[in-house]
Amino acid sequence: MSRVLYLDGVRSLRVLRDGPALRVCCLGEADRLFPLGRLSRVVVLGRVDWTTDALMACAEEHVAVEFLRRNGTPKARFSCVSDEGKPLVEMGVLLDELLDASDGDERYHAWVAGQETAARLALRNSSDWSSCPVEAGALRRMLRRRVLPYVHGVDLDCFDSRLRGLIVALLDGLLRRYGIDPGAPSLTVSGINIAGDLATIILWELEPGKLTFIRRFGRSARRHTGGKARLPLYSAVRFFEAQSDDISEKSQRLLRRLHLFLLEAPGGRS
Image (cartoon, rainbow, N blue to C red; front, side, top):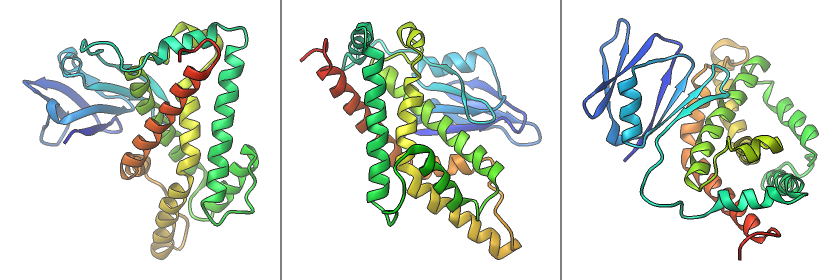
């Protein structure tokens, strides 16, 4: 079973190639080996030193390496596109056709806004939050008020930023698999951050689980210290991994909805 390897640059790490594996070296600790055949991707948080051989080994085995800044925002992605044929769906072509239309970017943003609204309505209707507002800003403020009794605001902001970065990195890889280059000129010219847009929708769907996760941290801290919890840097990774199957399913479902929208949009293919 493949897994995601997380490398945290808070320590001095160096990644080397060791035959069919990555060798991760950390000063003062024994080296660790990670067979490439068991990795689906590598997520690098902060600064980690890589040798060229190690990066090329990942490319040869189609293991994407995603670099995130310390605050969780995407920095770069290194991968090798498989030569095993064309993408199963021509979503990149369909998206280009949509954006070629005079109002294509407006229709795209309208679709994203509709998906966000639906996610916020589902959040309200699937919980005991029937009195919650649907408007994005008001809902964010209300959710924040529910969490702040348990954690410090700075830690919450860091958690949210890193969680968003992890989801954007996942979506970046999925979009490329479906034939969409998130950095394509057509998207850049239109000012569209497609991975970020889709991540925002998924983050709304994760709010109930995130609230439960953070409350658990907070209650434990209150029992031990009498104060608020300090969310460690790895907490966002821990939450992401705990929800990885659900996040993957939500991402795939959202991409199928995007594909259907592109097919049905004027100029799309039936």
